[in-house]
Length: 204
Image (cartoon, rainbow, N blue to C red; front, side):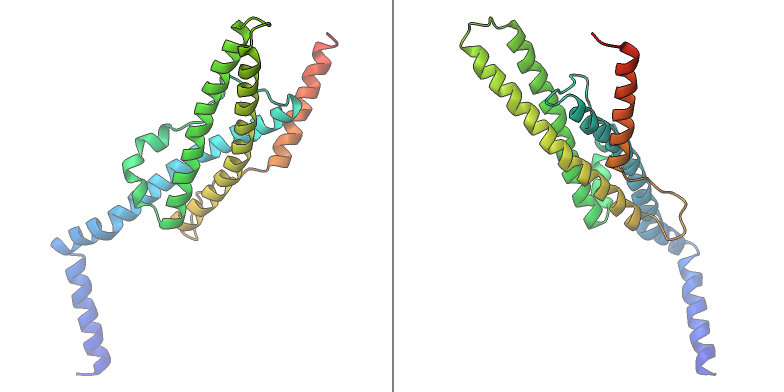
């Protein structure tokens, strides 16, 4: 028998074994199913990250208009991450590390908002002559500074996370994509919107 014919026969036999009976189940469990699950997890996390990225960019721009202010209702979403926490380990190394870093910062930002709001509430309730007022004011300023410092880093991490997820989860011919954030563009839109609002409201 010709060598090429023997090789072709061997390959055909191998493929037949893989895609028939127990071989098909093995192929599904070891390759196709994990790959599909990784893609599903990656797409879901990328979607939530895209949402958070826009919220972060909007708050950074608004913070330039009103420095130091931290809105008490500011919250970044963690629903997808919490729902898929047990599956994050299925992601490739680089996006997995970025996802974990990103959500550590997201959770820290949400806690900082609570801390800032609680401190400001206490500050408002404290009489002006109380020595505690100076300490509370210092705590509020420190929380605000930390919030915006971490917010900027989280914006960068969110962009990097989306890029890493897309490049490692999606194939070269996939139509699935997530836009990364362009802070300059968002900043311009926010400041234009604030300017128009102030013009409508007029002078105090």
